[in-house]
Amino acid sequence: MKRSGRVRVQAAAGTEGPDLSVTVNGLKLPNPFVIASGPPGTNYTVMKRAFDEGWGAVIAKTVSLDSSKVVNVTPRYAKLKALAASGTKAEVIGWENIELISDRPFETMLAELKQLKEEYPDRILIASIMEEYNRNSWEEIIERVEATGVDALEINFSCPHGMPERKMGAAMGQDCVLLDEVCGWINAKASVPVWAKMTPNITDITHPARTALRAGCEGIAAINTIMSVMGINLDTLRPEPCVEGYSTPGGYSSKAVRPIALAKVMSIAQMMKAEFPSSSNLSLSGIGGVETGNDAAEFILLGANTVQVCTGVMLHGYGHVKSLCTELQAFMSKHGFTSIEDFRGASLDYFTTHADLVKRQREAIEKKQKVRKGLASDKDWTGEGFVKETETMVSN
Ligand SMILES: Cc1cc2nc3c(=O)[nH]c(=O)nc-3n(C[C@H](O)[C@H](O)[C@H](O)COP(=O)(O)O)c2cc1C
Image (cartoon, rainbow, N blue to C red; front, side):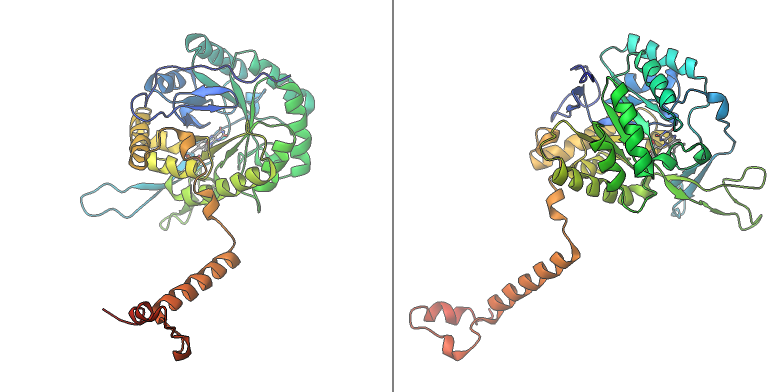
């Protein structure tokens, strides 16, 4: 039986001004800003820093049972920069990584998660896990990770590179039959809330999201990185990031992916609203290119309960959560919103089909033409409304 999260409140960033706190799957976060799984949650020291700076929750770097199978290379990142105006620093707009899940020993990560929960019992700590297509392995990793006291599990069904041969990460998240079976194992075993993290590298992201929710997951997190090739060095003719002269496609993140992430989150939120209307305890975590409070507001307007940040932390540091909170509060004050629920999902209803846009536009034009033209024909004059009818045809 799953326990729903314990309700906790603590001082963190954004405690003054409009209320930023959110409750997801029974877990109370002081603000919706969550450290996404990746380098910003890679060890005790950095996760502690995230709590100290006031992040709403921390998701640790993905772990698996056997880290000896995880072998990273360096360099493993490459940046896409916008053209800089003279005298200014080029802005990073895109980021590719070929980093795998955590290469640190599983036992070490467990000890660090446990220590963090002991030192920060009132903060929300989420473990990210990934395993092979093997029920025993999933049961073992869930049991051992839960023993550390973490508040929830995020399942990495979405890592785009590395280990597809072991059917891990995106290889599992792209196959709904496999996903259904594995989510069934996970939810039968887990006693804390489970979020399924989705890959955008699939034709329709609502298919795996629906599968995970039907199989008992309490939340969806989207998106992981987008399959990418950062570029080719035109002097050496070698691709980036370049390791011993060679490269491999990697995962794309940062600002440039935000419009894609918003579209994926929008379609998942619409699916959840249409197909799981009475499941108010289900949650959605938006991820991809968040660097400002306004970016976060957009994800929340599309239905996200929380917003995760990975590359933004790598570029701006942990203290950035304070400006994220201040900017989100400024947006809320401007519109008179006093809580996140006041505006969550408010923009979702303004998406429709292209055919409906055509219909709406045709109707709007017809309406305008009627107003502009006044009477269509002299036969339409009436004695009653004569003065008003005259006015409709006056230009000044
Ligand atoms: C260097 C790097 C490593 C990452 N490692 C993981 C990981 O171990 N597990 C995971 O679920 N996502 C991982 N991600 C994906 C991020 O959590 C996030 O989904 C993605 O980067 C998009 O968000 P962003 O634009 O805020 O970075 C990683 C991303 C980067 C850039």
